[in-house]
Length: 391
Ligand SMILES: Nc1nc2c(ncn2[C@@H]2O[C@H](COP(=O)(O)OP(=O)(O)OP(=O)(O)O)[C@@H](O)[C@H]2O)c(=O)[nH]1
Ligand SMILES: [Mg+2]
Image 1: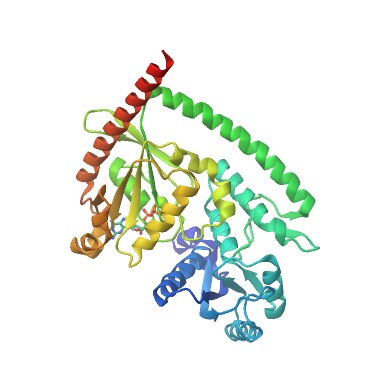
Image 2: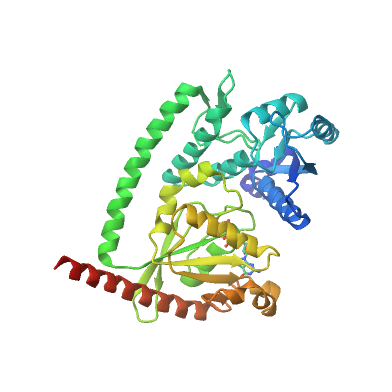
């Protein structure tokens, strides 16, 4: 009986989890609270990527060194700590320049993975759709291009290590020329996907069905909210980046009409630029929405920071002017008073909910209906104006 269970366990639980030393590099500008939050986030990312954290180091740096980022004494102490705990990999909580990464790796004699590679790796692990896989592959190749050494690189999807996953089916050995060729081919493949999407979009636009997108920091509760609103069977979990592929469902409004509501990839502080670029097709739906539901986990101490990170990324993808409802989620964890005394007051279009327990969801439905009516009115005014201009 027991072996059925064993077979469904993830590979990492069967004794192959890599031992990871987590290194948080703290610059002078950062406060203590920032550090605690970022260290927690780093640890969650490493665990999501199948790593077993044996030790966490916080290293303060005053004057970053071009060649190794840290001082030589600091690199030596990373080496010693890694050796002491038998770490296989050292993961840094920031992007390292290719030169820094290579030099540190040389000194500490272990694989060095930076934050960007770690996040791309998690995306590679999660991508299910063809489009998502192509997007992750593009991000990974763009990341690797400036990091090639003479030998080229090896990517494999079957490898179990932290920060080693690639999206290809087989082991790929690539040099710079091959990477550039592959990027060219990826571009052609994505162009085809985009064209297909355009056709779908214009077909959908003709139906006049309004679009709503759920956006927010990773783990804010976006999928739980979609499930609560529509009964969709979206997977939700504590670990970051559970959902990558956009999933759309019908959301019925009071008057019998419906809209399409889409849940998509979560955002994170310093989301690698390669990923934002590669995911532009996926994020295109967000940009075309009539209304955004901006989900915020108010049980996190630093939820205001999450809000500004998400605002930043919405700005980057050109979705910052879409009418937005702020959904302050997880109030079951904090009680009603806490978020009300904070920033939530300054968001006119905000509602306190618990997606898990259903609190506040009726109010949210009413707000969505109202927002869509206004969006429609705007659209008709615009069309009428255009008509007047035309005659
Ligand atoms: N207490 C509480 N937990 C919640 C609530 N909503 C979601 N959660 C939990 O928060 C975690 C993340 O929820 P998800 O719905 O997966 O979050 P997400 O925003 O879709 O995350 P990603 O897809 O990974 O970006 C899960 O463990 C949920 O059960 C809520 O209202 N209250
Ligand atoms: Mg999700």
